Image (cartoon, rainbow, N blue to C red; front, side, top):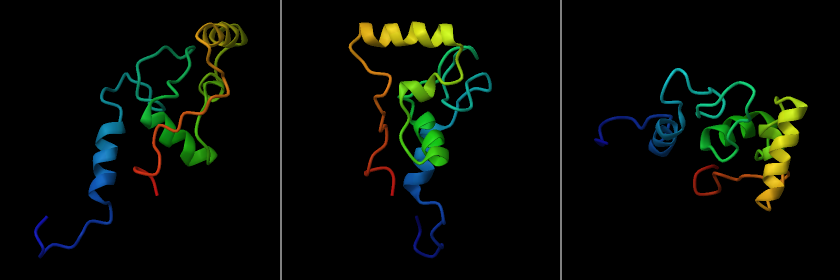
Length: 102
């Protein structure tokens, strides 16, 4: 950046972060930036979902949060799949840590 210009209130890293996180196509989920049907969970590992969720809930998302809008049948299926892969629905995904967030 030339020295004669004022620094933007949005830092370069924030601009870079936004360009990485924003949904690329109109048909992607606006919450997580991934393509999925409305009855499917959000992607809790998505940096966009992590930021969106953390901005409202003040904590990192978990699979339980990502599937909270799903039907009980879908939630049961997802919990079985998580257990099958030795994962917990309570696992939080700090996709972004100190190096990216204040």
